[in-house]
Image 1 (tube, each protein chain N blue to C red):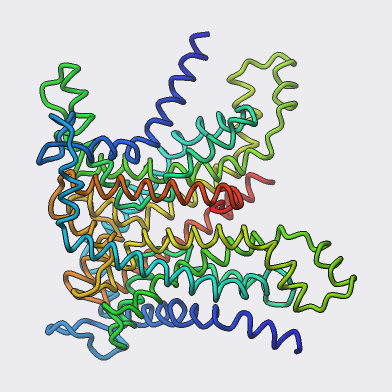
Image 2: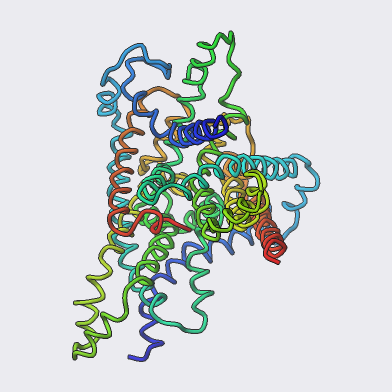
Amino acid sequence: MIGKTLHKVLIVLLFAFLLAPVVLVIPMSFSADRFLVWPPSGFSLRWYSALLGETKLMEAARNSLVLALLVTAAALAIGTPAALALGRSRFRGREPLIAVLTAPLLLPTIVLALALLIVFVGYGLIGSWAGLLFAHLLVALPYGIRVLMTAVATLPPAVEEAAASLGAPPRSVFRRVTLPLMMPGVAATAAIVFLVSFDEVVISLFVVGPELTTLPVALFRYVESKTDPLVAAVSALLVLLTLGVVVILERAMGLARAIGR
Amino acid sequence: MRPAVLAGLLLGPALLVNLGTFLVPIINLALLSFNEVRPSGGVGPGPTLSTWAILFDDPYYMEIVGNSIGVSVMVTGFTVLAGYPVALFIHRAAARWRNLLVVACISPLLVSAVVRTYGWMVILGDNGIVAAALRGLGMAKAPRMVFNLTGVAIALVEILMPTMILCLLAGFGRLNASVEEAAASLGAPPWRVFLRVVLPLSLPGILLGCLLAFVLTVSSFITPKLLGGGRVILLATEIYDQAIVTLNWPLAAVLSVLSLGVFGLALLLYGRVLRLVEA
């Protein structure tokens, strides 16, 4: 009996531990104090209004939003055909090809970042939109391909065969049957790729320039220099954004399947 | 259109991106480790082994490698200990709760590492939640938990827990309630059912979780950099300092190749142990 209670307490504590940092930034973001102090002496919206005055952070946020949209569009355009080819046909060299295409997800991001920095410097891509787009595609594309391959693998082939046997030419089978069936997978991929790009920090840190920076990099630099509740306000907003993406993923294909390894 | 041509058209763009942003830069990086840095800061003509020789001349770098491995093993150990009960609980939860619990567990995975690390600063900081709680309990001076290894380790365990839980849950697929019941009905006490039935069956999931946790700790950068406050020096933070602060790219390249070597060794060890377990 005591053992069972202890077990329950342990599970609750572990869940609390797991969710604590993500949940506790929210009350902290309403702090009325100048520094990170718990408990806050009072609650206010001062850090949210301070946020509006932080032009650097706001500009970085706008950059991140535009970049994440571009990366999502590019990853879908490049990744969907690749995932269809890899998911639908069995050819020699398919396994090694998948391994190469998804390898960037296995290696330390800091190593990938350094490798990119050295090549990018030679081509003047540091601190440019093109450089950031390619840098983000390095990790966003493998992610996208992996989720899309899962989505393709679960398409029922019988429906397409039925359409073809009823006389539909391959092109309209693809457009009228395959593509609509893939839409939830594509939506899930878009959501996850958007977030991967929007949250990417290590690679961005190496390829941003003085004129062009992203929100996570700006936040990283801010936290490196000072810790006040301003970052809690940004964090609270980012947690809300993540929650939105979680809901989309869960509806579209199930969160565990979308990000399961 | 011939199938080979079609496959080439479909895969071509993805392969080009991979080649340009991954394969070529990585090979270039490995080659750069055989250059040396000029006193003026630029990269000198190669090939030379002099940058690699620094590893043997200056024990500092081998210490960092040892330190990285040590910290990663410790963090991995704590992550298994913290993740296992949660995963087992979710596995045994009623079906209608299970999905919600899984989502709650792995959602933090999607929150930016900067935000989660900052969250731990809020909790562990000198005027943070834990310090306030300890003061409330009558402790005069709470121990320092940020800008040292304690804070980095606590945050890393939490950051890696979702990945560990995912691996463990996949591994629990092999668990069968009837086997546990059989063992119990034959008179085995609960702890023995766990040790002799549940634990061995879940070993492959544990191993995969440990491999990923280890590898992710070795490559973790944001958490040791921000919560370590310059006092926790691991392979990733040193690569950053050499590349961005000191501008010694060849040495940063050597350290990168070293960390890839650590990855390779971990993978090899994983394969060995997995074969032993499955035999």
